[in-house]
Length: 324
Length: 308
Image (cartoon, rainbow over the protein chains, first blue to last red):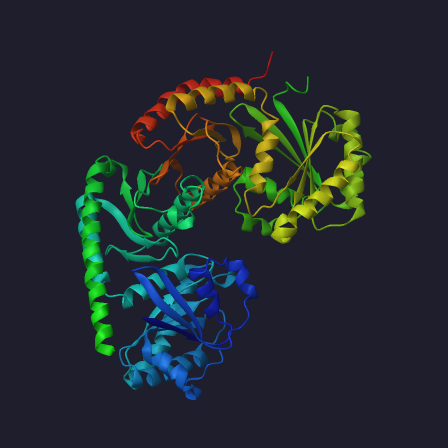
């Protein structure tokens, strides 16, 4: 599965990828050199996050694309178009987006397009109203152009590398093109209602993107807490939980479990689901009393998730055979 | 008399821009390292009283390091500033080659010798993060030699520190250790508690700063800096909890090899207990911790009590 990342020069395409997938700290991204040719980033953290991300140079023009670039775009299941929200006006960049869309749909009609209104940080965007204003403005312009040309409308995300919004947007994007996520979500909904869980995520431990969550809306606060909890669990396990000749990968194993109690009456609970996949949930203290029941239900969830995964693997293999 | 005074005077000195206020803010005021960029320079002396371990009170004198303040300290304020000092912390920027810095240090040592000869002196070689990893030891050793040469034969302990990793906690944990009057009492009690729980190790952290107060290990561990790392990890998590308007009460982390408990312990401390024996049920250890709380409340108080 390929995801192509496009956008004008210096809008932060490579920075996004470095921060999300290569653990670079946001401050260091200032020193990234500009990308001159299409960079391939292969992500293979676990069976649920497996994709190749194509980082296009900012100088890329759809009208002058090479045959190689055309093939990349043809194979992409999704295009992420990054827009610099601090660089007004947006018209020129959005014009580019629309011409890109009409070109891509001509040879890859199933491609999904996501627009990141990026760099929503700094003094300009302290106020939430300003952020929403940007979102409205951009989607308005794009909607006008796309209905005119009878193109499907893309989705929009407000992102910044200085908080978790970029992780959230990236999670949503990857979920959109991963088959079987809907079934996972159903399973999580069932788990949630039976255990009276407030919110549940399934995390890729390495990138801290969530692979699936229940159907209630995601709020950044709970996402951040859960994501920080994974940091704590991994860091502590790296100190005490690995033997002499083991490395980071052994820190998170089949018995990895963690409970964090907060004074607001919430408990954070983490369990391993699969290799490098963690289920993290927020439960009210009262509902956490019957801890063993939650454990039992999570075990059943694991079985279900395994079946979904097996079915998907089979499907992927079949698809490849058809292609080959 | 100075040893028994419950008000412990701590002088924090060093050249302007060395990072004194930054490190103080991270340790005692829960700043995130990146937030320290916003701090301005310290005007003259910033005095703050910090409650530590319930009964101890640290009078932290953060002395602004600009040249004209420095001259004041050694001339008109010399008597008041350097009297009754328990601990002098002098911060060097590892990058700076300025000879004046060393001269100021020299003057500090002289003044301490005159007015508070029993004071402990710590030198922090700060901003180590700006130096490539492989050259850090070399740079540190060079600076340390220089410092020792200028210390007039007094006993000086040097640390390399950086606000971006656990080295800051290592240095400050060692410093506060000198400020706790009866820390032996604590270590002995922890020893007994550790063997009663058949745990690998037990560590006591101060509640608000998460500095290591005392620890006891029954097993060797390869990582000697693990406590400071834990301080750093837990403190970061505490800060992210406060963003969600919450405070964490306890946490357990386990995998096949170990089980770690971090729990509110006495009114001024957190405890961490590590157990690698999988036959001991976590619930049992948790109960042991809960039962020990009351006893340790007294032990902590005794350890900070002033000898009569």
